[in-house]
Image (cartoon, rainbow, N blue to C red; front, side):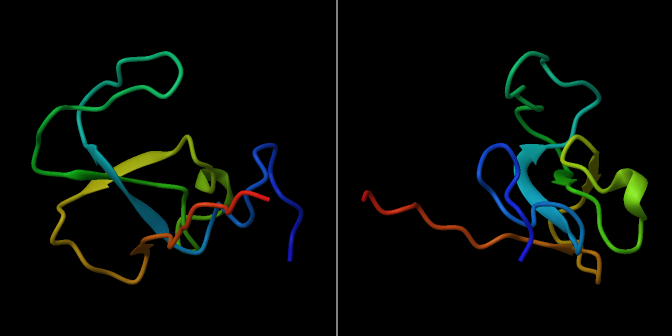
Amino acid sequence: MKKPNPWGLHDMHGNVFEWCSDWGGEKLSGGTDPVGAKRGSNRVIRGGNWFFGGGLCRSAFRHKNVPSGCNHSQGFRVARSQSAQ
């Protein structure tokens, strides 16, 4: 229902943290689309959630949790490729 962000995506922040494929590490490689650790015991979660408040409700906020972690503030985004028109 809201306007898209600069990349044309809607509702990307808040609700629940989103699981990422990156492993959680101490530092990112830097630059555009930085790469996380090659292995680890925690996966990255991003995007903030309803419990953490508006100040952390942004894609740049990174946190981590064990892949088996389950709680009311983490989830995933279902996505599909846009069909060619």
